[in-house]
Amino acid sequence: MSSASRAGAAPRAPRRLLVIALLAVFTVLQVQLWFGSGGVVALQRTKGVLERVTALNDTAHKRNAVEAADVADLGKNGAAVEARARSELGMIHKGETFYLVVGPQR
Image (cartoon, rainbow, N blue to C red):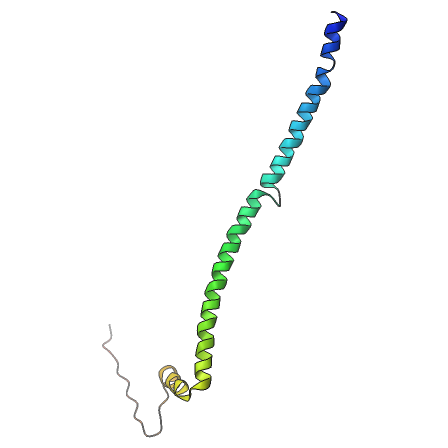
């Protein structure tokens, strides 16, 4: 072989190793980007959890608003307390007669 062909062959090996090393680094970085602890897959999973928790919080806030309005109504209005006691606890006034109507049994 001539010295010119050997000189051209020698720089190719380090270049090929450099390309292989860069591809390996690129592959490792891509795997970390997509599947690592802070990667795209984890981000999508976290977004899904956040959406579910936000929906639960919205439901709880609405329920709490209804309960707060109910508590405020009971605090201001004695008639509301009486109505609740009659309907939920079966309380009656002195002198009233309580009738319990039972439907047909199935």
